[in-house]
Length: 231
Image (cartoon, rainbow, N blue to C red; front, side, top):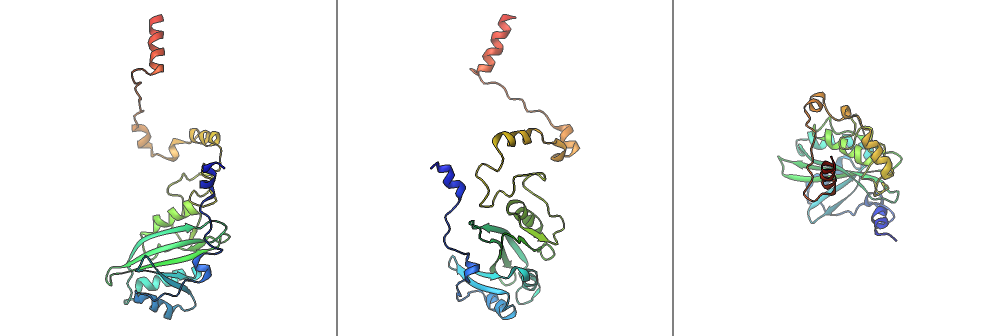
């Protein structure tokens, strides 16, 4: 088998389900917020774990994530005022994609990670942009690369790939290593891109064409010199 085929297949499954599906290990939390979450949202907290020695992780019901995040942000006893990161994880093999929130409470000096598992047939979750403005571009990145839609996002569109990118979502495990289109089709699409879709008029007008000088000994340069001699 070609080594690239193994890379394209992605990592081998470590189990039949994600940690959230199995029910996370009920670890003794170091962060008091975990116990507070369990007490207030007992039906929406699916489990908790501790990773990397001291990172408290809560697995939450995605249907309640907006309510949970708002409480974590607004509650005086919690005050998670900083969204350090928002990303996603695809485990492959048809398993759910997890949306991951890395939160930090500056007043209380606490870190907390929230994970929500979304089945592949329902990749939608409430936007956190109404809580943390910084969620805007982070959610657009997850939408672009994983295909997760964020309900209520003010401008949910691609942020890294072109708006008309037709090959899907590149960080999904089912995305082929070399893309879904052939090299010829990818080249054809690249050459037929409309510059006005990617540059503002001023950038197009001021753009200076790149000139690549031939290096000494370049065959193309030799051909040009030979032609001058014939003339």
